[in-house]
Image (cartoon, rainbow, N blue to C red; front, side, top):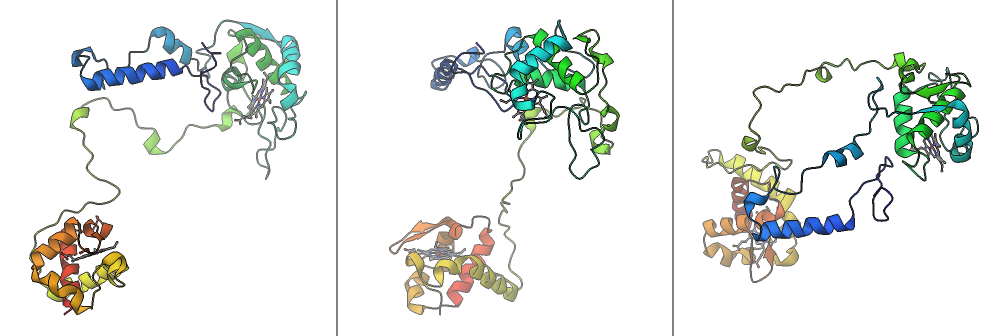
Length: 320
Ligand code: HEC
Ligand code: HEC
């Protein structure tokens, strides 16, 4: 399954199992559900789509290794076997001594350089956990064939990288049993995040019913029109003028797209005859007229109805 030609690989080198067949099958299911051919009671899960992942499928993804060794599979590998493998499968990019070929990552050395202006961050000088090395190699390396190594091979090549960093002797055999005995030198410089907001315990009490959660705000504020009487007329006029200049003058100053020009009496006479209420309504709702298209609120839908009404007052007043 992992090597099938239509499988996909993500940036971590993890191989996925979404085949074209499954995709097609998903669409068929979607069609059946939406068309009502399949009864709603046949649906599974929260959204009524898909099937529950089987324990076997979950096992395929659940491969992370923890610093305490949890997740490590059975197996072992010696520095000696690792050297052989490393020369064959890793050295062309990472160099025989982990020095890195060209711009490929350096895997060894760099001790004491972390405070330099250009630190050399390697497994020996920087990394915190041996488990990261094991996990990383299994998931992603060799770069061109991720997940191609057996567990024993990962143990062996991990041992060899540790050896290149002077962390173990050349006769060491790495296994699940002695894995946690190897501490990386920089480990203690990684400290738990002290900020208060990351130390909060997880609250799983009095949780809100998910069905009651609603989106109450959006990036673009939609302000409802409030029917407050305009008390200070001059303030409203000034507001109208300002909004006109900012938004409406785009079309209404030059007559772009057939817009009636503000200040041209003849452009407005007939329109005013229909009454201010209708004029305002059309500016708010938008309409297609004899001359062109007036978008709802000129296209600036974040403006309130009241604001539009003020602008229209201003536009008409300025065109007498
Ligand atoms: C074709 C070139 C190539 C080969 C072969 C290769 N690697 Fe890599 N390796 C890379 C590249 C490129 C990266 C960086 C990937 C990234 O940062 O996304 C990398 C990253 C790594 C890292 C992490 C380095 C760091 O500091 O982030 C380790 C460890 C590693 N490789 C080990 C191995 C081992 C072990 C093998 C052999 C089994 C191997 N690589 C084979 C190209 C290669
Ligand atoms: C993209 C161009 C454009 C913008 C921006 C624009 N308008 Fe218009 N507007 C038009 C056009 C075109 C018409 C004329 C349509 C017709 O009658 O054929 C029009 C007509 C109007 C009318 C006359 C309505 C009627 O009943 O005759 C009013 C009032 C109006 N616009 C107000 C506004 C206001 C207020 C703004 C700013 C919030 C604005 N417009 C922004 C293109 C625009």
